[in-house]
Image (cartoon, rainbow, N blue to C red; front, side, top):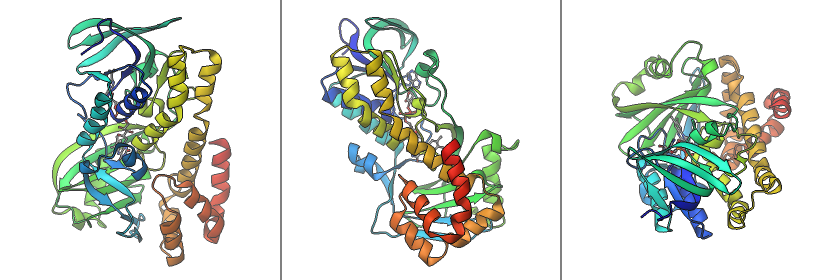
Length: 404
Ligand SMILES: Cc1cc2nc3c(=O)[nH]c(=O)nc-3n(C[C@H](O)[C@H](O)[C@H](O)COP(=O)(O)OP(=O)(O)OC[C@H]3O[C@@H](n4cnc5c(N)ncnc54)[C@H](O)[C@@H]3O)c2cc1C
């Protein structure tokens, strides 16, 4: 049921995981919320490897959407040096059915009193001194709405971000993925492949997801050198090193999507804010965006709710909200610098050298002790400090930290 006067405290464009979580958190503070979703169902189409980190999963509690608990990884250098990390007694991350997960997040928002319009997308929006007026295409019919604040949780190509000229994420990467049956992985352990041939600057993955395995790669367009992500996938499955592993795979689906990793300078502008992928919050180290989007909501929720309740969007209040993102931005920049030092800026030969060191038992135990998919900074710093062979990377990392 839509409010009779079509007025809400907050209208959220996009009912993905971040929009759904934001709606629930706002409802906890008694703020009226309408979510607009352009598709006619939640969670489709999805573009995701489906990994949800433990902290994000705890916030939703959707353990019944888990397909596989991921406790370890096998990582391969370009020439095939293998390192194995993790042990089955510690869950590192969850591989979920992304459609069910998104549905759960949005259901929680609706149960807490948020309203949802499917097949609905804004056509225009205008901010004035008392609020935001929107014209929305609701299932083919134009309808006017108003709100105190407009939030964009509308993904990497955010309409809200573009309409209000809020800047662009620093990095926009591309992720590509194929779902296959018949991959001979180990239940609970993901595989990561590196090398210019298969994932220039980043890595390719094979993630167990219940009955299928998600095989993917990600990259930055400038590093593809004329190749497509599909070419990289073909190079992986046909490579001499890995051909055997892919020989019984049958494809059941494929998709490609953007991964924005570079938080906007100002995610809040007047009565408009952007969240999650719309704000450029994916992790530069793994491309994961769900956990970081939830973190952003948690960091901003009290200040945001106060501004809405008091209808106070003064420059000071906006500045406070933007400043509250500084730590997230710093961490994202540090992660990118470490990724560049250890992976992106390494040639295949250098990567083989890095893996040769990583595969030593003393370094593996360092990884097992300090390695966290969610936060690679402590491990990266520890390695730069404690492993003499990595000291030469320190200059590169420090330079990137300063200029990155
Ligand atoms: C190949 C690949 C693999 C990935 N793997 C992972 C992973 O394993 N783990 C992880 O955490 N992240 C992963 N990501 C990133 C992850 O998918 C995103 O970070 C996450 O979905 C962001 O959530 P969101 O709610 O901000 O945006 P989205 O999930 O993109 O949701 C945005 C919603 O807004 C709707 N929308 C968009 N525009 C409009 C509009 N104009 N009007 C109305 N509705 C609109 C969309 O339909 C959608 O429902 C991956 C991405 C790719 C491409």
